[in-house]
Every structure is written in C-alpha cells, then in structure tokens.
Amino acid sequence: MTAADGAAEKPRPNWLRVQAATLRELLSRPLTSYYLVLGCSALLLALGLMMVLSASSIEALQIKGDPFYWFLKQSLSVALGIPLMYACAKLPQRFFRLAGYPLLALSIIGLVMVIFIGSTELGAQRWIYIGSLTIQPSEPAKLALVLWGADILARHARGKLMEWRNLLIPLMPGVAILAVLVMWGRDLGTTLVLMIIFLALLWVVGAPVRLFAGILGVLAIATVFMITSEGYRSDRIEGWLRTWENAQGSGYQAAQGQIAMGSGGWFGLGLGSSRQKWDWVPHAESDFIFSILGEELGLMGTLVVVALFGLLGYAGLRIASRVNDPFVRLTSAATVAWIAGQAIVNIGAVIGVLPITGIPLPLVSYGGSALLPTLAALGMLLSFAKREPGAAEALAARGPGPAARALSWLGLRA
Image 1 (cartoon, rainbow, N blue to C red):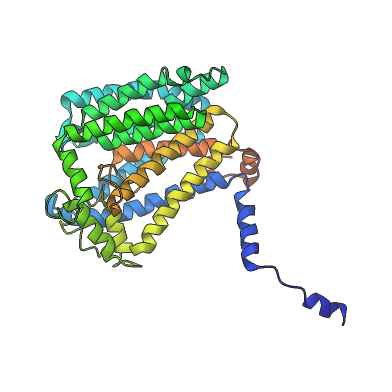
Image 2: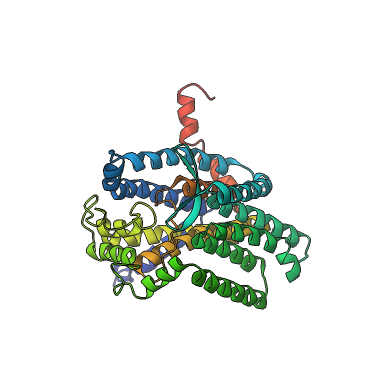
C-alpha cells in the first residue's frame, strides 16, 4: 500500500463536528455580541413594520379611511428610534449611570399625570393624549428602572455593602412607587414586567434565596388581590382557563388568536392573506400581532421570531458575562429580562399558556411609546458590547463604517 492510499483511507472529519467547531469559533469572536444585538434588532424591527402594515390595514381603512394610517405612524416611530439607538450606541457608560435618575423622575411625573389627565381604554388608564401624540409613561419607566436600579446596586457592590438590607433600600421603595403608580392605572401587565426587571437585578447581584422567596410570596399575594379586586381581570382569568367554553365572551380574543395560529399551518397563508384580521382578532396590530404573524407566516415564521428573541437574549447575557463592570453586568441582564420576559408573556398569552395581560411584543407590535425605550436599551447594549475584551481592537481593525465612508465620498469627512 502506498502512502497516497493510506492517506486516502483516513476517515473524513464528521460534518456536525466541523460545523460545531465553526460555530464555536464564530461565537468566540470579540464582536459577536455586537453583531447579534444589531442583526436581531434590525430583523425584528423590519418584520414588525411588515406585520403592522398587514395586521392593521383593514381596521385602518374602516376607521381612518387609509390602510397605511397605523403603518405610517409606526414608520415615524422607527425613523425616530433608529437615530436614538445609534446615538445610545455611541454614548459612554457614565451617561447611562447618570441618566437613570432624571429618567426615573420624569417617569414618576408622567405616571402621576396619567392618574389625573390620562385616558381610560379597555379597563386600563395608561395613555396621555396630546393632540395626535399618544404617550404611555409606563414604557420609559421600564428603562428608568433598569438604569437606576443597576446603578444603585453597582454602587453597593463597589462599596462591598452587600447585606440584604442594602439590596432593598432604596431599590425597594423606588420599585414600589413605580408599581403602585402603574397599578393605579390598572396596568397589571406592565407591573409584571417591572417585577421581572426587579427580580433580575436582585438575581444578578446575588440576593439570598430566602429574600427571593419572601418577595415572590408578597408578589403572589398582591397578584391574587389585584385579580380578584377587578371584575374584568377575573373575567380574563376565566377566559384563559375556559377559553372555548367562553369563546363568545371573556375568552373571545384568546379563541380567535388561537384560531389564527392554527390556520397558518407550517408555512402560513402568505403575507397579507390573514382572514382573522378582518375584525376577528381584537388588537391585531398590537397585543395579538403574533397571532397574525403565525397565520400568515406559519409555524416557521413564529419559530424564526422566537429564535431571534433567543439570540438577542443570548447576546445580552454574553455581554453581561464578559464585562467585569458591575453596572454593565446588571444593566445588560436586566435589559434581557425586560425584553425577553415581555416577549415570553406576550407570546404565551397568544398561544394560550398564559393569561392575556395586554403588553406588546417588543420591536414587533405597534406602538411608539414602547418602541423608543426598547431601541434606546438595545443601543445601550451595543455600547456595552464595545467594552468586551478585544472588541475595541476589532472595531479599530474593521476601519470606517458605511456612514463614515459615505461622508468621505461626499467630501464631508477626511
């Protein structure tokens, strides 16, 4: 046997092992988190615009006489949000540490204003109308809690004052003020998201298990009280537990959403071909946009959305684990808990495994008040991703970006 024959008989490397090694190599690169956050955000944003146009066109034509009415409003929010995201990606960490305090104060002022001049719709008092502009102060309150809470805990961590009392003061009173004001407007869904952020901050900072158990017990009791104290919330629970028995009553929205999801099959009816958006699914462009997405794009489309949120969550946790600064670690983890947790609650309500809470699907649902703080938080993650080991060198080696090259071509930049 010749040497060539012996070489030819050597077993080829397993294809799966080769692909796994390639994937590990890609994930180990310094800018992986940066590109994952940027790519997933862009894809979800583009998909959201497409689905808002499809899901809202019929109702917009009936009510406003223009099928593009809500799509154009959402496009304006995106046009404002992308520069905001870009600006946040360029800002230093110190800015975010300082921004949490005025943003929290403004959120509290806005929530107080909602109590006196806010509009009530569908049992909740969440919105302030200023002409054609709609403001929902509870949305920026999520970002405010992330920034302010992370800075408070990071300062305690730096001072090594990690007793449980120092974890709760002043964090607990601040969270309580936000939660009470939001619940005053009967917005249980946003209160749930605020609690998710609060628990994520405590988890990352290393709160003891007994503290978690106590807080979860208090939250469970408060949730039961809030559900039983309002008739429409009890009806929602009844509609969730007995959806099909109450398909013409309290379970109507859940039943129609599940019909939409089931009608899509594997690959959907086709973009724009939804039947349930013809006045069957309430709030098809906002809270239940995932059901229209499932009907038009099928199971494959919904799995793509879930995968994008999963990758976005992975990228945020990767940033938190690779940067040593406690503020960056806390902020990144809390942002992931906020966006991924809100996505889980929204999708869970649509597919029937969770009660309907009325919170939007991040980056996909209609609503500028929710979109702008989310894009600002994602821009902040991009800024933090540049602080990962080796990221600054990789960015410098990459050279000028498309915007810088365009300015250079126009003679506006050397």
